[in-house]
Length: 308
Image 1 (spheres, helix red, strand yellow):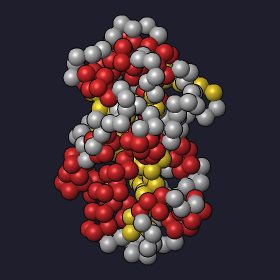
Image 2 (tube, helix red, strand yellow):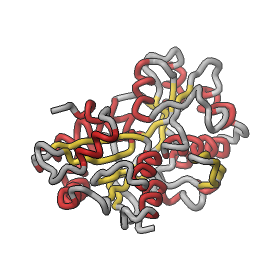
Image 3 (cartoon, rainbow, N blue to C red):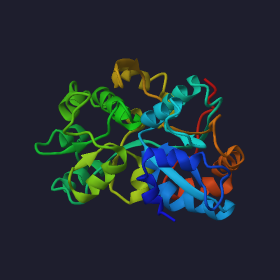
């Protein structure tokens, strides 16, 4: 039996074949696609717990949620359950007729994790303790910033919003461009599953991050005010909307505003194992699933189910 990490590396054709093979049992994987930042939670928490409870082989596919949504909508990837962050990926799948609703299962906030190996670690610690200015630290010469691709990953889009809000909050015009460069900056952009690994290795000094994923990996981080971290749904209309901007998509740009950082789970209309998918959704929203979310640093779900 391949390990869970080996399963993530399977070619897409093999993943599809396994998902279409029949009922979910010890020989046939129960395939779930999820936002790449959820890797530690799924590999070490929810995946093993669901395997033990239901005697199935859990197969997780963690990537940028927009990229996953497009693959699912095009039926190039067939899975049972999809768990993205923010409402945007659900809207893509819903328009394809593959999901009628999505249920909030957890939430998180943006933060700025930093590398314990960074030569700027003491500076970042001072910012986290409130002794130093965040804009000044980010603009320090030689600081290497990492983030994900806004065309494929909600986190890559969310850091653009976060830095735009930081300009307003800290009264620092031009901060986003000075820190991030252009929206598509190859020197800063990495695949979501590898971003925090690069940070741990010291290849970059500081990066965008979700507090949940950062907590799961035990990394130090600079917390951000609610006006910046996209985690307060009550600020969506009155404050976050001020970050309305053109953001890159697969082909061109769209004008968008920040969406609250909520993880939504949906059972797909073409799920190979619909009964197991329903059981999995109940597991995520039930006592055991919610306890695992909490253990791995996720906040309680907020907001209402999506129906688009």
